[in-house]
Image (cartoon, rainbow, N blue to C red; front, top):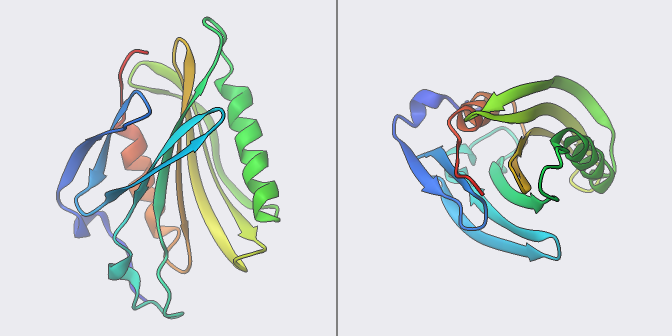
Length: 175
């Protein structure tokens, strides 16, 4: 089984999100894979280099991805906590599973903005596998920016450190 190590990606690059007021630092080799438009905003989608992981025991790639979305809120309304809880529940319901393990649930500060970090695993019924998700909801004046890092397969937990480092390096542009 292969293992993901931050040392495998010595070069991190700054990436501006197209639809969110964030600059991310991602390992070189991660790429933007377009956007997804929805009624409540658009999402930037980034994928990691799965080819490095295709030699795992199951023969399938872990498909790590990072989604970045901005959810508009009324000015002065601080609701990143409620949005974090709702998104976590929505993800669990969409996957048809329940939280297998809650690894973190804490209020933090990201680039001088209040935020909530949730890290959890859940069983995805459709994929018949466990998914690890690292989710950060960052409060801004008129929006909440959401980062969702997800990985599945045998190497899923190896990506946790990578996602946490990406969250810690976020730079927020004022909205």
